[in-house]
Image (cartoon, rainbow, N blue to C red; front, side, top):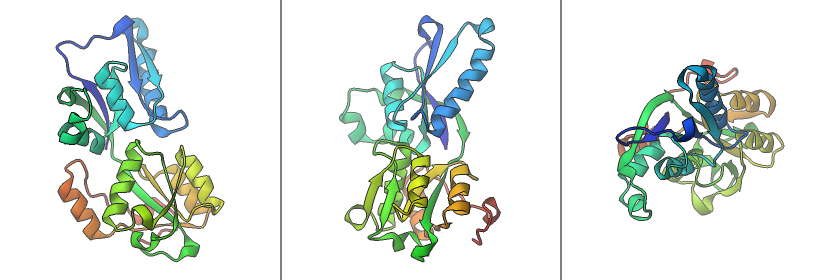
Length: 239
């Protein structure tokens, strides 16, 4: 899920009547979501006298740091990132931030992981991507962390992949369509418009994640949940 998070304190103080929301890359979905939230707040600014500003960032990891250091009042964070920040002893000891003060304000919408591969590969499962060219977002983003976890559990992480990094979903779709990569991993609400583009224009297909991989990850990580994608969500998908 995508959560709107803040730092707990006795009274939320918005400096200079400004509410800053840490989001994501300017061309990404989180920046757009933050823009919608700020548009709604700013429409009634005359009443509450608070100006909402969207802060572009690299993603969930940076957003958590901005919220906890006070350089942003709120941030958009994937649930697995927030859970990791609060529960990971390694994360807490490697920084001077008080992760106990991180709180979720609202769960905005569920996020589904989509693994897309070129049909010409003939791949039937994630494990078939071993040795292939894979497009991912940059390390430090919630999308990249989730992709790394799933790929590792499926046994195709690290040296088993030839990874290229792209700043946005649009860049990954372009690379897949141009056959610069064999597969990509996208995370977002389903149905997801970039996925529809890849399926209709790039001869791509969705790869299922093995049930044993899903069961293991959901069992180990309380922030994750099973999501079954209806075949009717995307035109032409048989499963």
